[in-house]
Image (cartoon, rainbow, N blue to C red; front, top):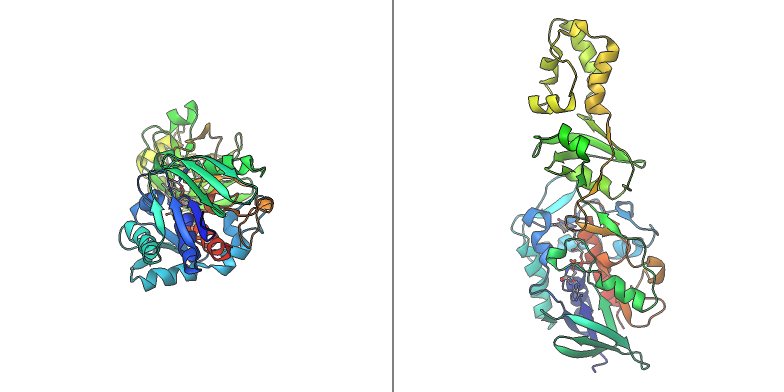
Length: 394
Ligand SMILES: Cc1cc2nc3c(=O)[nH]c(=O)nc-3n(C[C@H](O)[C@H](O)[C@H](O)COP(=O)(O)OP(=O)(O)OC[C@H]3O[C@@H](n4cnc5c(N)ncnc54)[C@H](O)[C@@H]3O)c2cc1C
């Protein structure tokens, strides 16, 4: 066993960042991953262009039972630190919207940046390496059993992410290891995930799959303004993914389409100015016809505006601007970008990421109960927690 060896399980965003920082600090670093490729989630992220951070990263962009936990690492390794790395590597990037920074090139460029740094620092990465068990000996060292044989180390970093997107190698391994060592894990749920409709909504909105609408979406005292996107199964799009992290089964979702316009006032004004115009023609100024048909199912829109009472116009406007539904569920971990909940942050030092009860055992990245909003915040958490842990490993 090498006293100076740190083993990181998980060659994802957090694990690779941690490997770089630890190696810079003079540690020998071995990264083990059961997948056949490092950083698979980086490769598929951001629609293939990796939304690698967000210019407006703040602790308030993260959900956690302890909202203070993420503050220290986010302050010690900021979005500007990662941007500096990207600039140093000469990789072009752009802001898409809302501070979301994307690579101009494929996501591979960001992954290669990390892998090249690992290579230059002598970090060893072993792929196709499945860990079957971990033991801690009385001399404080860890013994790992794997399909490649045994490994020993004094610092063991769990960077295995969590359950979202199992096709990319995601597992609950990190949570199981936490429990094995007596650490608690908070309740977990899929986050940043599309909603599914029940039979009634499915029938009403059939045929709208692929339609996207600017909306404000609200639930549980939270709201987000972005697009919603109808799918074959229900509703997705950035606004929906954001609110899904706050949704609990049975909660009502409220959607206001066209949030910049008071549609009821708009209809009333048109009624005054052009009373002979048909209401459908006013709605067509704002929405495609098939959207109007689906939202206003069973409403008669083919009469001149003057034939409608104000309360009728309000009902029509509310169909778009106070649309309420209860999702039948979500598309689950299979389609979730993140896992909400995880290793209880009360068990972990926010400075070093070492488990308070288990010397030499560290947890970083998505495996922890820290989940970012959509928009580059989750990678920023992976970079920040990975970096701070790597610098702190003894
Ligand atoms: C489709 C999709 C798109 C996304 N896009 C973005 C985006 O653009 N911007 C953003 O900020 N976030 C995005 N995310 C979220 C982001 O990918 C994660 O938050 C981030 O990858 C978490 O980093 P991590 O290192 O903690 O875990 P991961 O990246 O999941 O890495 C964990 C690693 O551990 C390995 N592993 C797991 N179990 C074991 C085991 N038992 N033994 C050995 N190895 C194991 C896995 O193979 C994997 O390589 C996206 C997620 C998805 C699913």
